[in-house]
Amino acid sequence: MNLLSPVRPAMAAMVALLLALGLGIVAPSPAHAAAIDTSASYVLVNRNSGKALDVYNMATNDGAPLVQWARNDGAWQQWQFVDSGGGYYRLKSRHSGKVVDISGRSTADGADVIQYTDKNAANQQFRVADTDSGFIKLINRNSGKALEVWEWSTADGGRVSQYTDLGGANQQWQLVKIGGGTSTPPPSYPNPGVVNGDVTTHDPEVTKRPDGTYLLAYTGNGIQLKTSTDRTTWRNAGAAFPGGASWAHGYTNGSNELWAPDITYVNGKYYMYYAASTFGSNHSGIFLATSTTGASGSWTNQGLVIESNTSDNWNAIDPNLVVDDQGRWWLDFGSFWSGIKMIQLDPATGKRSNSTILSISGRNGGAIEAPFIYRHGGYYYQFVSFDLCCRGASSTYRIMVGRSTSVTGPYVDRNGTAMTSGGGTQILAGHGSIHGPGHQAVLADSDGDVLFYHWYADDGSSRLGINKLGWDGAGWPYVY
Image (tube, rainbow, N blue to C red; front, top):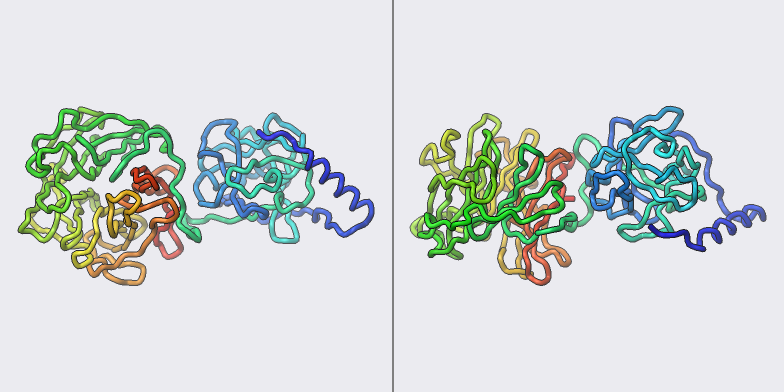
């Protein structure tokens, strides 16, 4: 952590001198209790920087530093005020369950601010003091000092510390209430969240295991796998079919590369639907495999589910299993041609239950693929990728969505345009050095809904993207 700089003592001395001379400086305004809803979560936005109080790197451990970061409304930027009595509160992280803490119970200017297990100690308690600007100050009970962004930093990662209450803008915070699972979308598309380890991936799909860890499957030889314990650090975990996939060679021209797996843990085992094809061809097949552990080499191929041929006007790739609110199983899939299709499955076998093929979205032959259906509230949301993938930094993938009260549609976008007529509301697109985000999937996790996707870096590599998914007041999703 940063050491105290000589700027601070000089500033404090200047303030004292100006006050002694009666010159024009406004003393910190009188404190009185702000209205705090202890049942809500808040994002604390610093007045000086416009950035939010943040648990660095989404950590969950005792001692993790608190910093400021561009507001994204993630759980690691959400804080619940827990009443300690006497006008003091602990600030509890929604992400980690730990509270804001002055490290080592220090009373010194510049002391580190961390998160720590809630002990209801005085160094974890803060008084909320209003200012005449509508912002608040947070005064520590143990030290009497104010929570601030060190040295008026405006950078992501700027250190949060405590200092003598001078009423500076870097010691003032806006309380932004996050309520009912909805909030306001950010003004621009966010960058992917922090991930590390083995993050090269294409067409990712994730399920949560019974032990709380994560299993990710993606396009590659024999279907490639990754695992994570915390949704941040990922490691390669081999192939679902390390010995190859000879049963699919008729669709792949002899290659063992399989596409766009969809992985779900249901009924005590893992179900994985995946595609076999070649670029530009709609001679394609969707297969099913199952496993009791999800580990490399443990998967059993259960055979072909559906195929398309050159005489068809649809393409059997990019499968996605959805179980509706009645327990019925459906498979949506498709790419280009006449668009996204849906069939009903038999839950007992995971295979087709009838010969009906439904159309649920399309762009009159234009680029649409990678459907994923997710139920939220009273709607089913169909996420799709428009435009072109697989071109490195030149990729133009973007994520679109529509919704319906029925799993089979009709799906419409925010403007009421049918997705079968090219409709779709954009929620994420390329920006800056983030190219072609797409082939999305949504996971309901313990800290909210999470969006997984791939994106391309400037060097053309395909990487894992993870962001939170929020819902606005009208029930439409946004990425943050």
